[in-house]
Length: 242
Image (cartoon, helix red, strand yellow):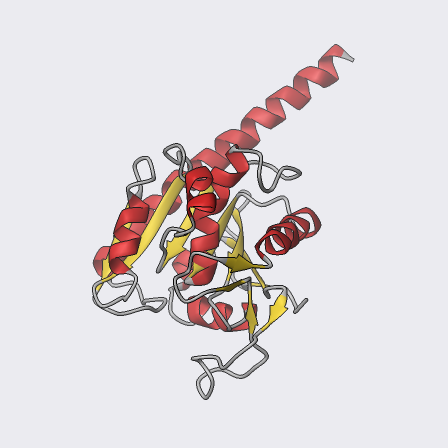
């Protein structure tokens, strides 16, 4: 396993929502950290507790980011040309669960490309008791360049019900996965949507997309604070009863 890293920045008052970040195919946690922290303003990243993990398997082929970002490169699982058959998928799910146990608890997941496909499917698989059974429920998602799994075996479980956790989805006008990302959004209840003119990339936040992102952050921060307050009230009552 590669190294884990966290964003640096002034910590706002209260606990920041903690996200496990899943990088794209044949890249790395460090590359995703550069993609996100290097492009998004501190006013966004400083409000999140981001942990960037490397996928469990070394890249089995050439990475599209060679010459742009330094190796090593990793992949979460392997797949066929039709993206309907997967190898090491179960091992990948177990690996992510172990990461969440070791580095958590986490409030949500952030994913890009292959990592976003995984992140977007995990709440549904968790609800069905097929993944992440030993960690708290995923509450929030940040999906960048996402899509649905095409395998009926996975899809019928992952998207069986509308996914209720708060989510924000980045859709690029020139992303080859745009139509797949649009279909993915339909599986969510009240998703936030950020559209940008770029392709399959982590985009910078212009004025309009920043406004949407800040509304999403306001929502999840409020929910996190309310959950913390509720937990404190329960602890106080237990102390009184003792």
